[in-house]
Length: 222
Image 1 (cartoon, rainbow, N blue to C red):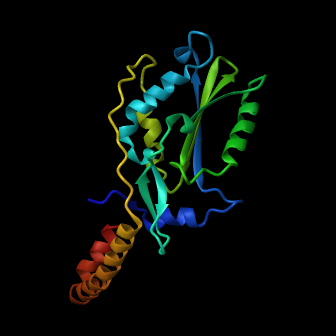
Image 2 (cartoon, rainbow, N blue to C red):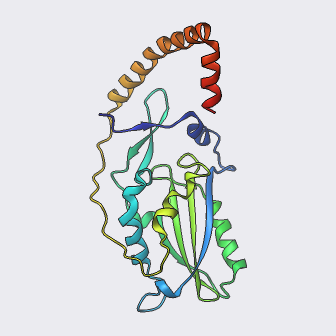
Image 3 (cartoon, rainbow, N blue to C red):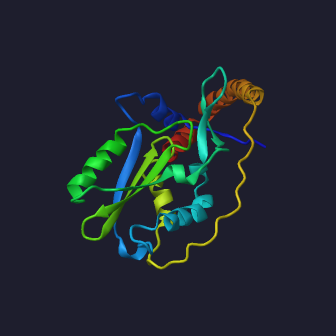
């Protein structure tokens, strides 16, 4: 059974066009009332936030996967990250005074100007306390190869609750799948290439014998 998944051509293109001056991550800033998440000693209860995310990561398994490559072909794939550490991805910081939105925007600019580490799952969430008006912010940063404009909200949608006192829950057991060997990846790639000529011939035959059906299939698949 495969323990990896190839990126689509579209998702792989987001990696290919990224360079030092063009970072291909997407981001969002959400601002909340700080009172429901106040820690006993003051400040934001970061442990509770991390626990809530940990309890729901099984709903978005991509967020525990990192990028790897097929040898020789250099085709990107997803594999489970056997060094996954939630605290690396869910970070905690505070704004300097006066802690207004102008200062927050500067911080967002600095965070978004840094590329994501491709050796780890390519996402981060920053918990930012010290925002005026007894508020705090969540800054999310996710590489475009992981999510599109609709599913980009996946992680935020599963960790946010309608009420501030919702039960956190317990995390599901998780064990990273073993990484495929280089030989396995090369063999799979060779088998994939060998199957392509047959698929191409069948597509040409279908287009020639039933052009209306093929045209309707292409149109409906958009």
